[in-house]
Length: 247
Image 1: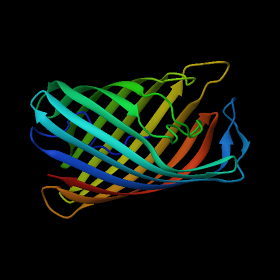
Image 2 (image 1 turned 120 degrees about the horizontal axis):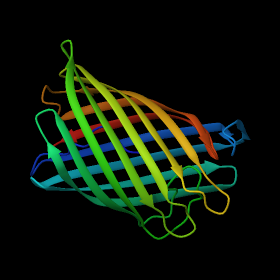
Image 3 (image 1 turned 90 degrees about the horizontal axis):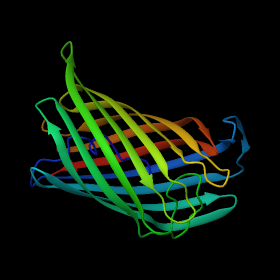
Image 4 (image 1 turned 30 degrees about the horizontal axis):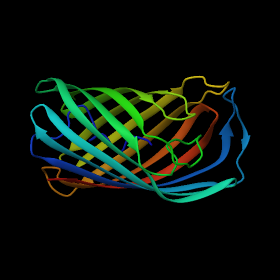
């Protein structure tokens, strides 16, 4: 599944602090990218609804624990599925942190469900996947506008007949006021070639978050996402709505 938001970032929560993000998505597609990268595949019916809950808790200065669970309702021409897609549990540790920059590493295990873990796999129960992720973030000011960049690269070891993956996530954001964040995000990845099959994808998402307090502890996010390129993946469009809460 795609990462939930910029809060799931290189910085992470402070010790004894928690973050919770609940995000709903409606994903549709009528075309798919074939093995050459062309939009050559007709998809007569492709609709997915997802609810994702992400939470992270700072345990101490050196460690935080995070978890992500998603519920899926998949309606495509060849199959349907409704239920718990997967559950992911992991640990994150800072490698470097300053007033404006942060670097962290995390390891997680995802499984425990029977849904789809990516857009080109069928819903099924498989053994857990293991992911190692490196994240780096930096904040600055352009004029008087606070901005931030968060870049992540991950290697995912898939189980069963699934090929391992590389994933790259990039977020560029700005805070035009204490109660607003606007973001542009790119989620890209590729699988290793396995049995003659390889998948690639690049999703672009834009979103805005409206907070209800100056300390940014409670906010609502609205966004849209589009698959702009790929191989053996649907050309999907998504509308997203999220609730952010810090404790």
